[in-house]
Length: 330
Image (tube, rainbow, N blue to C red):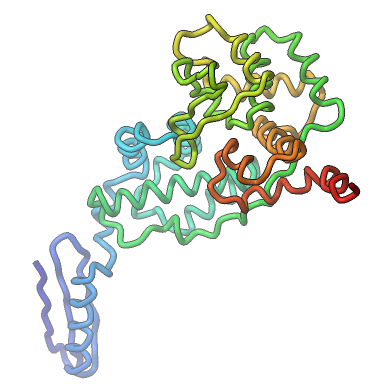
């Protein structure tokens, strides 16, 4: 329900525009024509839902309430369940959940960004803001939260970093193997060997199931992958040996470990091995680089790695430089 009124007060024209659930808007003009024009423009903007909702309404809702609902209703349907749960723990720990929606603006979010810069890298910040933007967008479009825009989308994010090209350095694999001899985790060694032999992502490895293993064809089916498309991963003798060494540890999953357990175990392992700057995901880069060095074509490597866009594989081209020179020399 909308109501506009124009009253003359002395030599001025006073305009009021009221609508249920919205703040009252007022303005004073010197001429009646200007007052009517402004009133009509405001009514048009209201019809287009182009005006901010009542501050009073947004003061009663916190970002934490939106996070709770998203985590309850949306997160369970997403692939990165544990990662999103972890991000929400960070948001709450840093007090982001206590902000009411009337205070959730670019300035507040920029302060959070600057605070995070002191402890995490740019990619972490970009991922955090990606989740926040998704939460707000769903709240606006599906839950009827009266926000006319998404403030997260307006915050300047750190620029994306250059793609990592880190590979195993000389002797680093041997150092990892020596460090593995001192770990009590019997799954970590096979997990690393399979990662280097197949180029599978950590989530794909941890989600691999015995029922999807085809020993006759030496294939492992991944029904759910990052890009949403299932694929069959061919298994080398090294990969098969790593998988078979896990027999009997779990009836369903080949590598029954939690993502956070892998993260912690990897950190301890690289520290024990004296290796710096090596991420678990770098093993995927190592594997794909080796595929090219073996002489596999881009389509062949893409079918193993799961890259939908062959251009994403161009950053691995440097890995086969020596092989290319040998081919050109013959």
